[in-house]
Length: 436
Image (tube, rainbow, N blue to C red; front, side):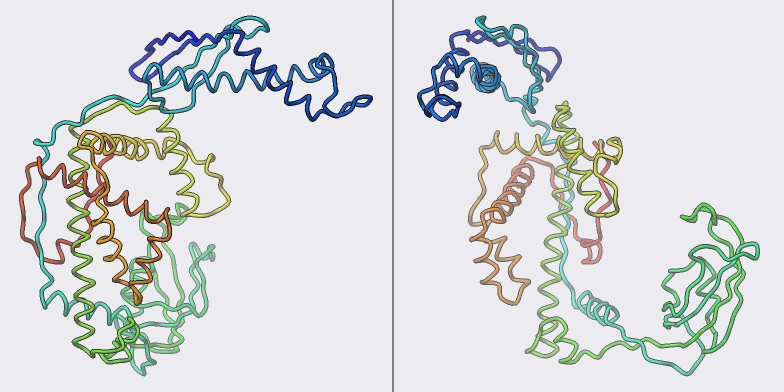
């Protein structure tokens, strides 16, 4: 087999492969012999059909199949011989494809970029330090109470925070508009569900009262037909309900699966969850900074095949997330190209760090992570057992741990500064990273 390789760009390779005719004919004859054993042709017993008849009827198909298999096998042999790492399937063009002649074809494909990850010392990391203070815990208990607020009928004027049951009709230029009317809808004053002025215009209203609100749609309103226009809403208040926070008692604790220990037991469990959230938030922010640093210090060219595959994955995720009747390939590729490029580049860089430092998943950390995730469930032992019985889920955890080990490897070489902050600041979501 003869092989020659031409570099047509930084990542594209054009490989010319020549395969002796004898190999092609051997593959063709092998398939014809297999066919002869099972071919059913009138006038002949199975297995007794003359090879000349078999060849006449089946050689064309056998040759086509043999050529496909030989191309696939010879391409693999060639890339191993040339020590190439294709990033996608090759585009194959025949040069000589004639019976009795050596097969010659050209395979064009991209390879993975070859690079060494560098710039570790130039990565600046601000690692947050925080604790869960008693005041943070008290605040969280209030948040949990508010999340479980119930509303009870009130015989008074409406106040901010009340839940009103209302009917309303909206009109623009005296005409009702689509989506501008509703009956029996629940509205919490101060929730900002409605356009500016709607909710504040109902403060002080009584049950059974009708109010007419003259309002203006915001200039940036999502419905462009209504943006910036003046409207009149006729609102009837059917009922008024005031918020009631639940008491911190056993009934409330039971909502969160806490059946023993009373208030102290509940506080202990909530604190554990907050501490777990804190650790995850700090870890996530450090990881984001590490990845940003690796991206900035290692600009690499992305194989088009990998970028295209990642765009397709993001299209599918978008359709799954937002639903609708649209198909993934109907979404414009350019919507996802920046995000796809970022993900591909990071994937290549992380993989190279793993290779450079010969990292393997630390099985002790894998178990520790699984146990931490399982601790949020009522039967943690069953969750741990489930992970170790599911190879796919276990391998996903191993991938997470391996990525954490990459972060740790970078931190050992990066410029790390610790900063003490409050719990609230530490768990606050980080700003979205810029596209690579």
